Every structure is written in C-alpha cells, then in structure tokens.
Image (cartoon, rainbow, N blue to C red; front, side, top):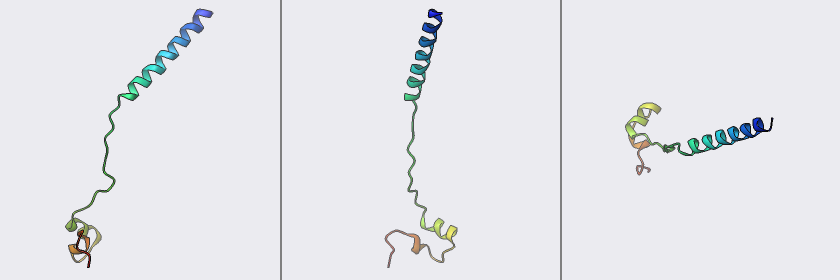
Length: 60
C-alpha cells in the first residue's frame, strides 16, 4: 500500500511538472487593439460623403 501511494505521488508530481514546463513554452503573439482603417475604407463602411472626415489630421 505504501508503494502505491508513493507511486501515485510521484506520478502526480511528474504530471504537474510536465504540464508546467509545456505551458511555459507557449508562444503568444500580440495583436494591435487599435487597428485604424484607411480613410476611404471607413467612408465606405460608415457611409460618409467624404474620406476627409475619417483622415487623421484633417480636423477643421
């Protein structure tokens, strides 16, 4: 009985360590949360009459 518990503890420890090592090697990619549309595309999507409204630096 004691060897069964000892083997179970070793297995659980090995499994936990394996999961930790595998998950730490994952690759994460960053995606930009601010994706700005070109002024012409924004005009088409939102139905504007001029792309100047959607262009940065064209605020009057």
